[in-house]
Length: 372
Image 1: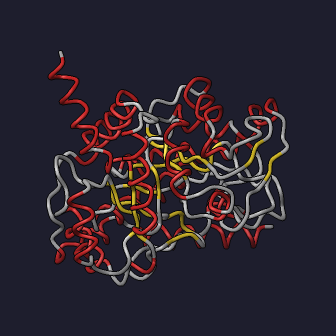
Image 2: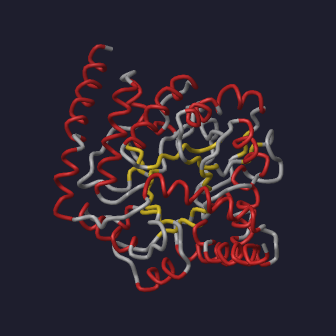
Image 3: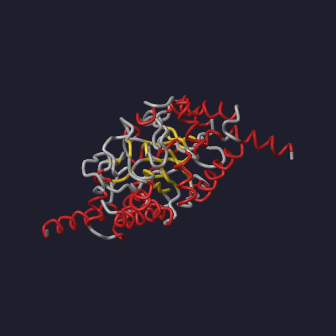
């Protein structure tokens, strides 16, 4: 028994990097980035517009990232919602914002859009999409969400959220419901400030959480915690650092998948907490994965959780549970990695029928406008 406990402690130390998704600086890995990914056994990478030039270049970058894997491949993630939030443009189908898609009142079209998105992403090695947006556009002046949402009614949003999740995950791209428990009523942008939500818990349950309930029932694999101060849930910590918020997601919504933070370099948290403190608070609260847009901040976070483990602030059993959830999801979606063969990408992306579908959607939206 003593040997088993010792082995568990060693495994936890070597697998702490699995709790991190980090950004990288450019269109190819630097030697320092490669070393960090390999030596620290990092769980995943998030990519942005600065990492993208073309589908072929993207696939080569992903191939080089996956060379750093140990037992399972890395999560390769992106924000690819359509509309104004789409990091990869040239070579990918650029669908309208989801508010426009929902105007067609067709969950099937929504499924087809997200399946096409998923197939295009997967053809370049992307296996995780931080989408769909489950927020309800309750505040017309809320520009940070706005037309990223499917609508301003919980039932409408829920209907399309379900279709979006099924579309992505049918294409073997992990979907992520965001931003729990709902960012749609706010005015401030959490990239720059900490929004404060005064909504009662009953109203949150009856309105803003409804699409997240639907997302969980639709078997979404991941939920993103928002950087919102919701007084009815926690008056001391934002949702991303709140035990109460994580317990609501786990116990009330019965979500058993992965919980990820929103980007931990957003001013909503960095203006109020130190980088090391943020990392530890999020994991202690119940988060499984810490998300960083830069490797510099990811290193600070990883060092902090190593120290927290050594000081027994993070318990071995809790770390093991997080790593098991990560491993289980990787086994389901990306148990093995075959390097992307770049000459095949164009053919695979065409097979997604994204451009054909886009043309049909544009025509339908045009006809709908004409009829009105």
